[in-house]
Length: 229
Image (cartoon, rainbow, N blue to C red; front, side, top):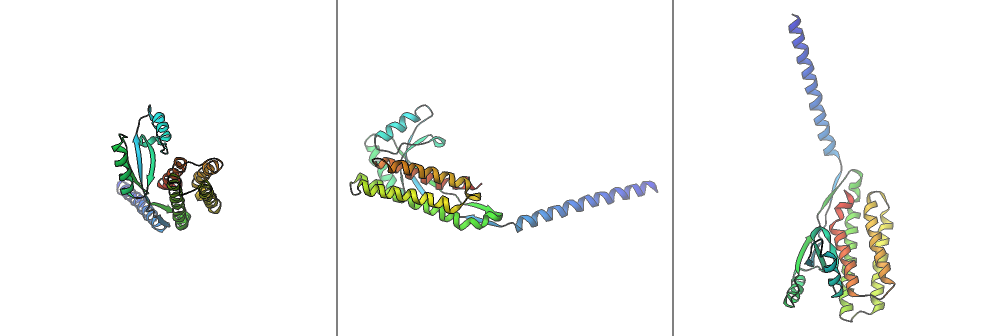
């Protein structure tokens, strides 16, 4: 009799434990489904004209590229130096062909911004986050056009300085309007880019310097998800 009662007690305890586990699983699923989620959709795609390098030659390649008129933007993760950034693949490939014909070894590196998800209270920031990415992308386009204008002498120093000053104001304006919290890390990058724009605006402007800032902004958009992790 005691053995039967003992077995019955063990069965009851096991059943109770199983019930608690099942209920816990259902509650976890319910909370997960009930959690707000919003996807920040980014459609930006960039085509970078790059020269390959390694840890030993990176500084030399970057310096040579800058002296030759390229941006000289070192992308350590990829072991490449970026000379310029384009918004159309055909434009990048055309320049690649021209430079290759002159004996300069370059290639096109394409990158597309990846969507990312905001959860909980952060989900309500989806529209603003997308607007931030769009604004930074638009500023990069302005710098691209201005750099081309300087090379063709169709844009004066005054005109270029006005464009850089506008970029500075846009980047600082975004950081200010965003506030902190969700945008804390992102704002740090916006202000860093704004400081570079301020430094550029105080001296003689060269197309390669504008391209450097343009490339910096393009990578800011590409890496946006990292600042909202």
